Image 1 (cartoon, rainbow, N blue to C red):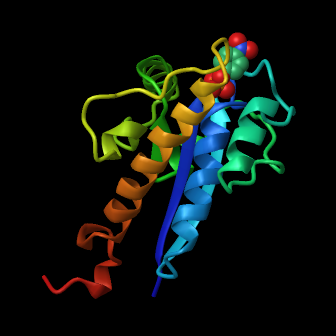
Image 2: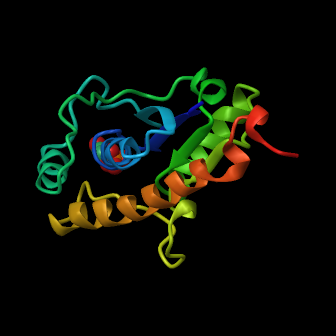
Image 3: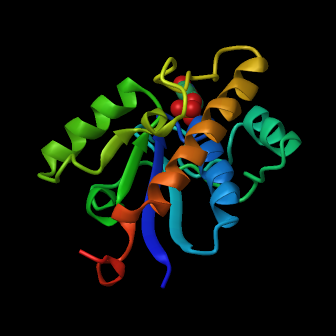
Length: 169
Ligand code: 4NP
């Protein structure tokens, strides 16, 4: 039996960081046949709704073997808070917005985390917004996201996420 989880990556515009996280995590997690995941991304703000990802994110991801071409920006919906098992914010500002919105709609905040809390490294806590910066910001985004994606895979594979009937105690 597979490990079934639903994972939502969230940033501000859903055109740079969270689509990159969606594409990178989709590829990294696909190498584990025991994982049966629903993976999506969205933004806390809707001003790029319906648009493809930023061309700089698409090309940087493509150079590193990740395909973002099918992703279209969407804004978070209240029902996302109950649908997804993991709602993963790219920075503290996204985290605050998510907490505020979940509480406003009377949903639990227990499934909302900072994505880099799953990272191996503990120095960098946020995926910096690359939108107004230079091109190397986009490679840095992928470095941080690859690292946290590997940590998230390990979390999902860990015993506490096994289906109840597979647990010994
Ligand atoms: P993202 O980056 O949150 O990583 O998608 C941004 C995209 C667009 C804007 C800001 C950040 N914007 O101001 O339009």
